[in-house]
Length: 116
Image 1: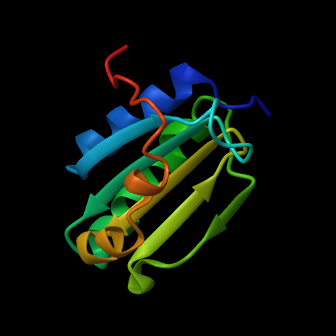
Image 2: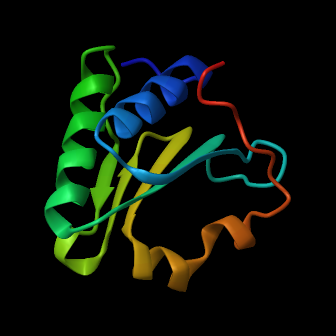
Image 3: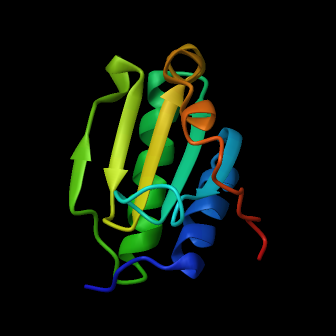
């Protein structure tokens, strides 16, 4: 299994965007976090939307030979995490995302352009 690199992160972000994910942000946390290299953060309008985004990202990366090491959360909780080791994908309901405020927590991390 390949570890996700910058190309995979961008692909996952584009898939999320295609599924109408809201407030899509990719943070390059390599210099500020020992847990992962990239965080992909986005929101969905409903629990169904969150599941659709998560499934699309998992399917898109699986097609590239990348599988999650772990998944956590369920759409009904307002948050789903797909853990790919070097990439953590956080998909939130908007209120849940505002509560956890990961962008502020990792505010020192630069954003990565989705387009490359």
